[in-house]
Image 1 (cartoon, rainbow, N blue to C red):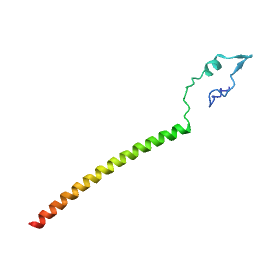
Image 2: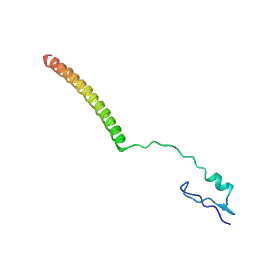
Image 3: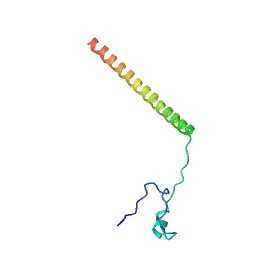
Length: 88
């Protein structure tokens, strides 16, 4: 009793022959759906990375300014409270 060997990579196997004819099993096994994929160039990847990094840097700059503004406001409030406490 022999078991058919399953191909690990579709399209790289020889179909099974029965008296010189391709068997029905081989016909159905050899129909493999292929997806059409767009090839991406290195320049496209580099441009995408550059854009992503620019967006990240813009977000960091915005958040940094926001944090600094809040810290300055907090510092002013603390100085105001400190001066009020010294007067009392």
